[in-house]
Image (cartoon, rainbow, N blue to C red; front, side, top):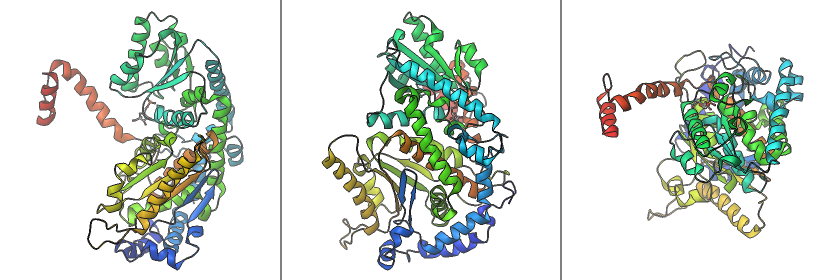
Amino acid sequence: MNWQTRPRCDETAAWPLLKEHAQAFRSGVFDLRDAFAEDSQRFAHFSQDAPHVFVDFSKNLIDARAQALLLQLARECGFEAHRDAMLAGESVNTTEHRAAWHTLLRSSSLAQARGTRHDCLAEVEAAQSRMLDFADAVRTNAAITDVVNIGIGGSDLGPRMAVQALRTVGMTNGPRVHFVANGDGHEMAELLLRLSAAHTLFIVASKTFGTVETLLNAQAARDWFLAQGGKDLARHFVGVTCNATAARQFGISRIFGLWDWVGGRYSLWSAIGLPLAIAIGSSGFRAMLAGARAMDEHFATAPFESNLPLRLALLDLWQRDFLGFGSRCVTPYHHGLRRLPAYLQQLEMESNGKGVDAQGRTLPFPTSPVVWGEAGSNGQHAFFQMLHQGPDAVPVEFIAVRDPAHGRLEQHRALLANALAQARALMIGQKDDGGHRNFPGNRPSTFLVLDHVQPASLGALLALYEHRVFSSGSLWGINSFDQWGVELGKTLAGDLAPRLVSADSAGLDASTAGLLARLIS
Ligand code: F6P
């Protein structure tokens, strides 16, 4: 089937059958407790192993017929052709006329096996080696004690989360690595108080080198550097960007490039990963690429019924479009993964938070849920009350890690017991006719297990999420690789910034005009 003319999920024969089948779930006829009692194999049927990641989704409101119909829907949608087109570097980002080929950054064999555009591979490998050699050189340069990554969105969230994850398990060394993203100057100002110009390396990470927040933070860093008497700006500022001209104009001469076919939120694997490479070294970075590659191969080759990213995407579609769940809570029971929900928010909501399909037709069904969350067990003492007893059921995604990096096994067992207990409590509930202690139960959750947090397993986990988001976007008929929805706000901010000086409110709505006056009075 041609991936460009393939049907959308609601144009398949499976779609109305799923609508009909979902009635039993929406009306509460399906009950997880009964489902487990009736099927001793339910855990085996609704769980899946993939490289570095095991997922149990048996505690979700799903049965064998729903699963079969969802797999049918994926086939009818020509999913395989679309997946293969993405992996082969075809122009699947149709509104921006470019590939979304982040898999090439971690793959040699896969790209070779799959065909086109091998020419890019040598270029990718050369750029990667140059970036990793530089990272290793920074790590052994005793004069550099601090590295500051200045970037936002995809130029921040992935590296920040990964550095934090691997730092927590003791896998980082070398200079201290910091991140500044916020357009609010307080983040940079607070950090600079602790730094010394002579010992700091700034990485200005911006694919476009046009993101206002990043440029303002970079200017703040440059002003501070010069005011501190910093010498040799070219040695203390490096750029990661597609826009070398703008970086040079800023005064940066050492530039690491990436390609337009690397989307911002998929760019951790490119030179945007430089702060991570500095933190874990080239061998750690290559191990992470290898973990992601293992997941890519699984995604490319596993049959639909045992293809983990696709199975999770089908569950997402089922929950969103048939069961009507509007949000998903992600709760990693690992301190290192505490920023994973923030990373996933961009990955999923910027990719699939869209109301039109790739052809620009208005979608008659909902797409990306609200993705939110917090590390366990912190969340238990904040929002789990609502998850257990609030009137809305919210699917919860638990992530647990078998082996801790600290030696306190008893404490780790207590953590795992909490994760298991929460998922179980959501499902089994508790009867209390008196009311306040009543837990309705039958609440859905998915449980991911990693053996440990290490570069390879983290790489596999992130690739799993990337492919899951691509898969649900593909079934919805969305282009998951553009983000036009962020543009209007940027344009309006450009119009408003000078008004904060001139106080000109002509043409503004009364609320914005009133707030403007209040802010500058
Ligand atoms: O928020 C929009 C966005 O374009 C993201 O997609 C991107 O990750 C981020 O801004 C940063 O962009 P850049 O790397 O070009 O500064």
